[in-house]
Image (cartoon, rainbow, N blue to C red; front, side, top):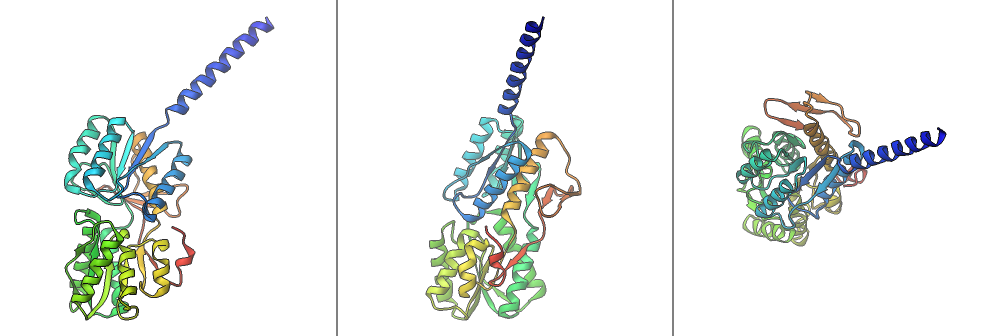
Length: 328
């Protein structure tokens, strides 16, 4: 009789192990497609996503284009839909082109949403926002005016011309300048694509064409080094103040050299964490609350049901004095 009990107990244990292994293999898959891989900003989002995946019990897939090409990004998104991931977040490069893949995702039961850069008319389920576009535009103009004056001439060096988040920030910069600082001269945005080398050339051209230039704004993180290097090469530190949406690690040397007066951003590792958490919520069919306290995050994330925006929080200002407190 004891032998029979042992046999049944062993069989039950094997069955339990088998079921556990099956569940281990069936963890939900949350994917994130950045605008470009290999830069500090999206590396930090990836790190935050990995941490969230470990905490939440999901598999995290990170894959994106190597050169900020919208066509390549859409192909990666389509491939992940075809693979059958459960939830898929995209930092959108071309808002006008993502609606068809959003439909393809819906047809396959994939929860497609946006993070870091939105496509509000695409049919996405939620937008995980780093800060409001208006808050980012206002912050960079207000802080720059403190340093260059209300009647300065300022150049704008952006990344890809189709990037909806970059264009939204520029739009709110222009709106803030018109409303608060009517004497401020914001030049028409110049687009440098995704390379620091091109941003340096665009910045040099702006300085040459505008000898009275007082400020330069690097709108994309990939353009930050090029803008700062152009100022250093031209010997314009102290004459032109640069700023941008740049991570502390990217901007640290330029903040300390004086090429950058400050930078504006948020913690992208927290944004990556929130992105994976949002994906898990969508997979589980759980509604977002107006205020969401999330273990593993430093502050609650707010949700606006009218716009479908899950907001990380207000922007942060990094300077030579506080930059060493951060590592991303």
